Length: 444
Image 1 (cartoon, rainbow, N blue to C red):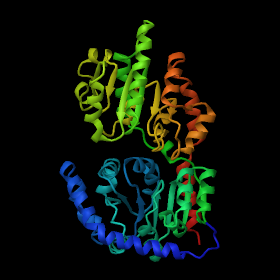
Image 2: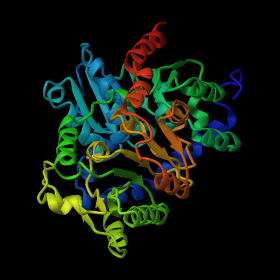
Image 3: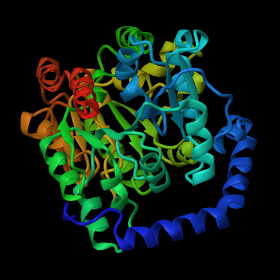
Image 4: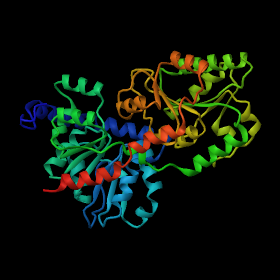
């Protein structure tokens, strides 16, 4: 976008008018959706007032951090800890219960002290946002990762609330798509006060979209807290039951990838059995919990010895029967919030999403645990840090057939943990860089 073009342009004004109309028409459907989701998870519908921006009036202005879900909140955690050192209270907003729960879990003391409030993001239309702004009077707002919410951006601009993208990334695939569209939420990005992004490549992307102030601050996910009980539990299981076996974790496997993933497992295990070698244990973690039952049925229909985390491990990740785990071909990870456990168990992490056109899921958790990583051919969404990790030799981009051939002829752990640790260390310091960028951007 040409930075000399007045903002908002005519097409943005038309888009915003249509956007408001869509909200007016679709709001009953959105409420019905939350009500239906509330049958399975009551917290979806429990705090409905927050979705309309209804809160009691706060005495002090707040720092506002919007982290849509679990991953975004975890990446923001070190930054939130740093911001809590000041006298300014914080409000974190979320769209999913997972993000809200994680904020409440990580910041229990700050919430009880009144220094942090975790709540749902208001619906993205003017009246709800105005009520939210009146209650919390944000000094400034941080949108974690990449969120083009037209209502939030334009209403913050109208209220003169500085609003920044934080830990931002805009995939090359998405920017090419959005630049071709006459109406695109991304066209509201010039309404931001600035962007703090993961790499110089990302900085160029945001400048192309018309964001004036851009700072390169690195990948905040490299600094997110690692749950030590999960790592300790994985270490104990490896020592007691899996010391002589290679373990490979397939994480965040999405719709369209199951057939290829299960064929990979079958081919690799058949080869090892024919060679008289110990078969690798595969840990299979679907991306969405609603797929747990479906994947269980798919695995059960094949000649695998498999078990589910819910049946083989206690709530605190202790083995119920070590002998059963020793004999498994596949352990199905049918739980939420335990990805660090599944990744800590493995010698190699294969991250899903990139084996179809959805785009790969993040590789940072595995890298932070010192694990080499493989992703599918489609890496958009994680160009950083994936391309840097590939160049450094700690990540490979292959399809399922290529991974299969690699595993038949090479050790699964294709690089040392020290090499992975060195890569992560070379990209550290994002929290300090972000704090410095916020100060710079807010300086008049």
